Image (tube, rainbow, N blue to C red; front, side, top):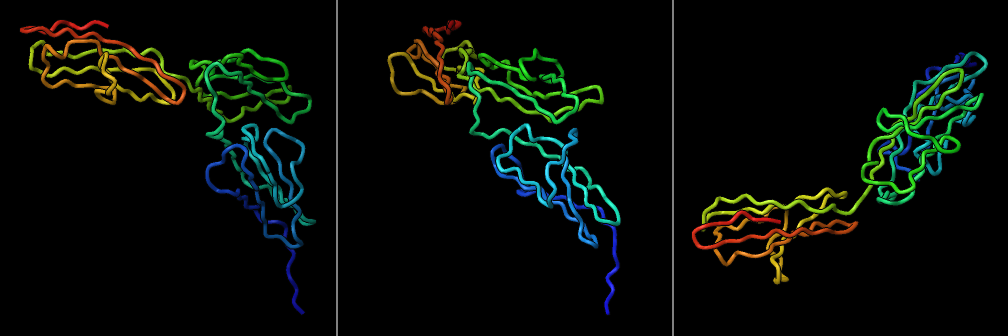
Length: 264
């Protein structure tokens, strides 16, 4: 006759599947396990919430959202005792397909399990933002200046807790490019034209000479290595990304014996 000793649950281990980066809308499973005899019963909780999320070994999040970010733990319990796992932090990143484009309407929503009901405050970096209904913050027409990290604070008379950060990556077409030139002041020397534009995603650049459909160069810099009077004329830079394009013109005036300062 073999007698198997009875034991209270050991410290539960918690694992997450998949184990890599967690992106919104994927299916995520949290697993709790503990060595116990009799076998343990499991309960899952999210920090800040009093209501159990699951009373099974596995907690399934079939289409995870940024609002699911936070700290989770499980308890393992049998008739001989109860043990609580270490914390497991879940950070849900916005899907790359969830592109936020300048001038679109965007709403940030915060929710938390609390009793009494929580009050909410949204922050950009550490600056509080105006609140809309039910703890939301609404951008009627989001702009490039709204790009950054945001988090939500929920609080009631018993305490408060902050969400993890969510990064709002606002995409926008290139702004009007700035064009400049670095001259040497001498015919036959090297001259570099430079173009730059604020854009997200980053802009690609193409240089043209007026009345010539063929590109002169690609990239921010266009270098003319042996400048001559025939290089005089209007040059324009096109800055473009997936959201649009903008161009700026620069006038070069080269005459025999001197190189005039360009103007745009």
